[in-house]
Amino acid sequence: MTQSRGRARFGLLVPFTNSNLEPDFALMRPDGVSCHTARMGGYDEDEVPDESQMQALGATDLDEPLALLLGIKPDVVIYGCTSATLTHGPAFDRGLAARIAAASGAKTVTAAGAIVHALSTLGATRVGFASPYVSGINDMAVRFLSDMGVETVARSEVQSELGNHEQGALTPDAVFELGLAADRPDADAIVLSCTDMRSVEIIDRLEQAIGKPVVTSNQAILFTAMQALGMTDPVPGFGRLLAGAR
Image 1 (cartoon, rainbow, N blue to C red):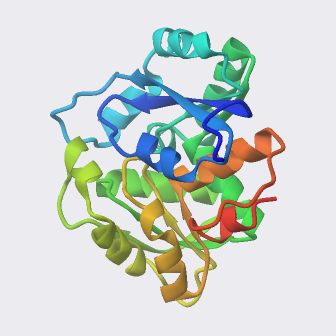
Image 2 (spheres, rainbow, N blue to C red):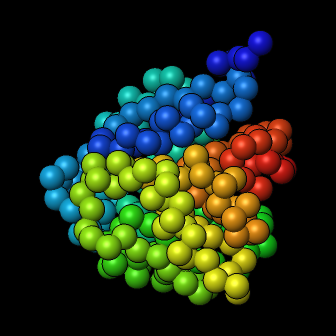
């Protein structure tokens, strides 16, 4: 029998317009892990999520959503937005994780930090990068990865600026094509960045097409959260990273 709870509690801090992180975790969560969420604000729902909007989200006060999330006593607190810290840089990302850990007493994982950790685990230092972000955020993401020792050898972008709900509405087929366009022979892996993009559904398909690992925000978050708790059981169906969870 599948267990819906009792093994560990994952607490998710989720941007308030994000409609995909929670369903992704429902698909991927290991047996016995329950997922609980609190919503974050700090940005304008009706504006294009550009550099200034995502920096505002990263800098917003987390006291209220974090306090509400701590009511369920999570074992891990997950900061569920990649671009909110990519746009501030690695030092900010590490500092935010440290502040959440200090306030919560729980293990803490950020989306951006999880991607870097996943790439390190896979031994990938050269990547193709794909996202639904505006070009300015992609520039910042490439710099973030570079600062962490990862070179971006190619990148794939959407052809128009997408709003918050438009990013979340990209179909898995559209995400597959976006990832495929980021592949180059010298890339060790492909990164699909954004917790509100439907990436986890096509990881296996894309890996089979390109013959190399695919790392997505939500898959990397789950992997890193599991490692933080010493959970080593494989999670098949979502790429090499989780299939060989260690």
